[in-house]
Amino acid sequence: MIKVTVWNEYFHERNEAPVAAVYPNGIHGCIAAFLGADAEFCVRTATLDDPECGLTEETLCDTDVLLWWGHCAHDKVPDEVAERVCRHVQCGMGFIALHSAHFSKPFRRLMGTTCSLCWREGDRERVWNIAPSHPIMQGVDACFELEQEEMYGERFDIPAPDETVMLGWFAGGEVFRSGCCWTRGLGRVFYFQPGHEYYPTYYHPSVQRILANAVRWAAPQYRVETIECPRTESVEELRRKKKEALA
Ligand code: ZN
Image (cartoon, rainbow, N blue to C red):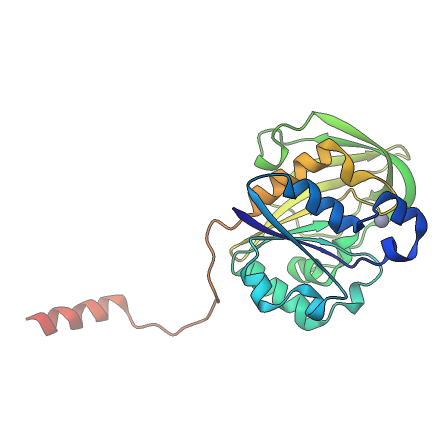
C-alpha cells in the first residue's frame, strides 16, 4: 500500500458558494475519493485548520506521498511546517504540488526560485502528453482538453525540470510547462498545473489518471529518517585495524 496524504488549505470551498458547488467535500475530498478508489492507495486528508496543519512529524513519517493544494493562505502555513515537509521530501517522501501550490512555501523552498508565472482566469486549455513512456503519462491520450481552466503562462520561474511530461496550450495563445518532475535529496517532486478551484478539473478522467500515476511515481524507492553530515573514519584504516586485531 502507498500511504497518501492530500493536503488542502480548504478556504475557497467554505467561503465561496460557486466553489462549494463544484467541490462540496473540498478539493481534498474529491482527490481523496478518486485516489481512495485505487486499492493500492491508503489515503488520508489534512487541512490548514488541523493542529500543525495536520502535518505532524508522526503523520509525515507515515506518508509516502503528500499532495498539496493551496492558494490564498500560503502565508498561514507556519515556516516550521513547511520546513518539516521539505525535510521529509529530502529524506525520500514524494511531493505533488497542485496548481496554485506553485507559490506554496514547501514548493518554493524545494525549488529555490520564485516560482512565479503569468495567469488569467477563465480560458480553455489543451494539455499535451509529451512523454507517453513516462510512468506519470502512461495510459493518457496524446492530448486532452479542459473546457475551463485558469491560464498559467510562461515564463514559469522554476529550475530546469529533470523531466517535463506535459505541455499546456491555452486558447489565448500562451503555453506552459504543465507537468514537471524533479528530485530533491532522495524525494521525488511533481508539479501539476491544472486545478483552479472554480472548475471541475479534478473530476476529469485524464487528470485523475495522471495524479494516480504521479502518486505511484513519487512513492519513495528509498527513505531515511534523517540526513546528517558525519565525520567518518577511513575505511582502509578501519580494515587495517581489524586485520591487526585478528593477527
Ligand atoms: Zn487558480
